[in-house]
Length: 326
Ligand code: SF4
Image 1 (tube, rainbow, N blue to C red):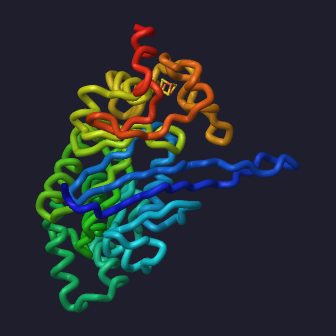
Image 2: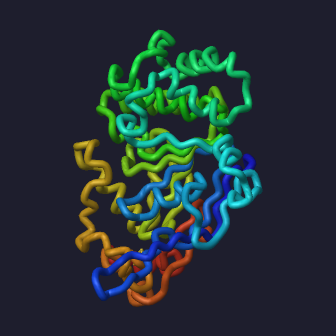
Image 3: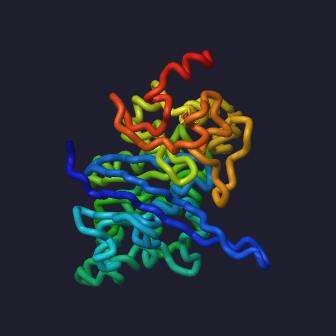
């Protein structure tokens, strides 16, 4: 097995949310006791509905948000003991929206040069050449160096964001919905570019996506999140061929809707996604689960290693309850 480059252990993040005048604040457990290992060369996808905690987890791995408890290590070193610049040297983000993540008043050359200036560890005389080389690697002609983002298409802008993320040779890239703001015709070009760059530059990715078609195309491992917990984690092929958790099954069934722009569509689960400030008792998925039985209403299932995956569901120990619903 490849070396673990990011290790997330028992990480929680709680926000205190105001309940209105005179009603005080209540805790919202956005991320609730997550363990996750990302190995060198992995493409790990975090999937789940909006509000499940995937972006909060990614921000903590980037060092942009401190965990309430638990540890995150990069190459065995806790990130709370690393300098901001050292984290940035190892990990870089690519955000969802290339329209808002690029400064419209800066030229493309200066946008991609900025991380080199911040890291200050190379000769400024080499910057222009490095930026032009990186532009070529991501498929942008060097002649666009002095152009501005508003002169380019959405796909080209996302290529600028990728070039900016990669200019300091990070090993790990965190992609938050990297294609969801793009036209469908451009999405596959950007995904293919990310795949090529992974091979060429030996990158490791953490992809946050609600688009399961994207995840199946690019990920090597998938972690499914629900209300701050990972409920299933498996190799992509295994998970898509035989989803084990009832929530994963519902997500995959919902992919059959025809409009890819809808992201994770209505899961046809009946009950709405619960309020994270007031989560259900026991297994937090139980109000929406067709297999729920008495234990599910009061005991929270732990994420356990099964044969070919990790899964948090009481059915793993009580398969007869699933059979009784057939
Ligand atoms: Fe459904 Fe129970 Fe499994 Fe939760 S633990 S997913 S409620 S069967």
